[in-house]
Image 1 (cartoon, rainbow, N blue to C red):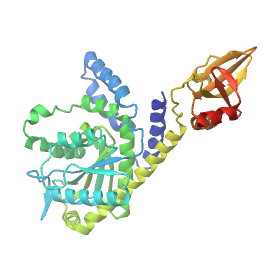
Image 2 (cartoon, rainbow, N blue to C red):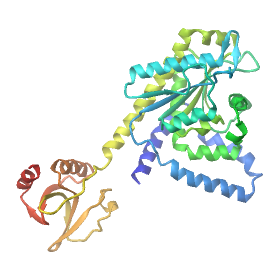
Image 3 (cartoon, helix red, strand yellow):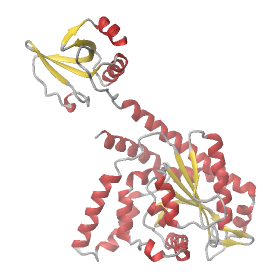
Image 4 (cartoon, helix red, strand yellow):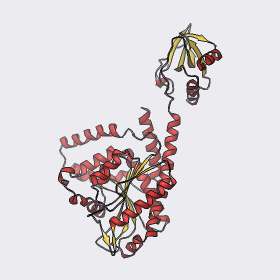
Length: 400
């Protein structure tokens, strides 16, 4: 249950963060849902939502229970896959340059973070393997870097994508173009299944906790791009295969349009690639700092783990939480979430003990936690073979 409460806390935090950058989650699915549900049979609908329900509670109960440790940086395309291109530029080259610059910044300024790359050279990596690298390392964040293109030369600006149903034809076209790399892979039909709207909806619901974080990070990226003078095209959603397959907060960044002569010239220059990497790094640092702060608060609120108690001839320390003439069932919901509360009858009184341990240092930690939970008058007692003994004598005996 604590894990679900942690998940709720983090979701509330990231929902507040996403309000800073306009992304309407409510409309992310509604229009497409109307379009597909009319043609669905009741059996298909039931199957989809049963799967959604099962995977939601298995995967969405928040696997990330520690500080930020690992980021995976994915430079799009590579090898025989050039991606899109402009005059004298290739998407694979620009994406790799920005990715490497970003990684060096994180490595230099965040010593507690392990930086992994899907590629560090001009080589081809399948979409499936890009996701596997992140999933196998249980990464805390996946950053995918690309450059954009359009049939027209006028579109410009930077945009960041999270997983979801596209809302415009342009978003669909971008996802289709980036997903088209599958055609360059061997055995592509065996490795990939078609991402239908219902599958995409189910997957997005399955990863909803991660989606909130993805949106928060994407919003920070767009904010930083604006600071360096880039046109803000916003946070959007589309069915990118690489985002579909990752199981952590993930974003795909379209840094600019190589089909636009001005942007192509901008993105070709190393100093501008450094600017883009620095903007992404600033967003990363803001996101990580907030995330660590939340996890630190969660860690502080967790109950200390008690060691196995040995009773034969050894002092056992306990915390008396309360006493009452009325018997209270020693369940955690009756004691502000404290578990393994022990009840003992002493004449007409019932006494409630918590945190039994042979360790004096451990009982002090448990006492501080009990007081934080609201038991301000809780105090320590010591027992040997079930009989109460002098606390100071017990402390001396335990230290020997």
